[in-house]
Length: 109
Image (cartoon, rainbow, N blue to C red; front, side):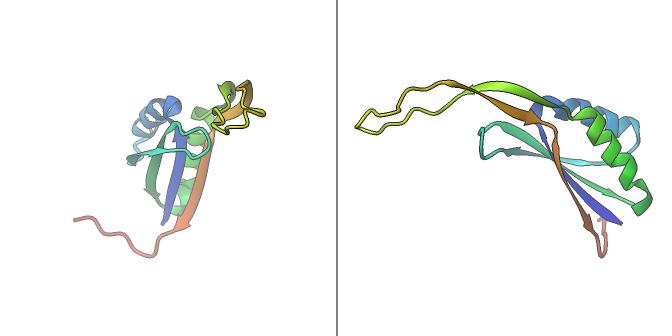
């Protein structure tokens, strides 16, 4: 048995959740937030048999697209005012960060 932990952008979480339900794959959703963009994420915890790992990874890959967006750099409150102007910056967002972990035992009460 494996535990798949997938961190996806909030924009992709509803679509992925629907696809997991349609494929009869149970998952637990947790709200989380990213460090770099401080944007909302959803972390899915999915317990599956070893033979289902590739199916779940494919669902995640198809439904969690990487895309580019512009963000404004944070304002620097330095008193020297050197380089404190903000400017838009293009960054990659979306996609998924996925961990596949072995599960020694599973209990449901």
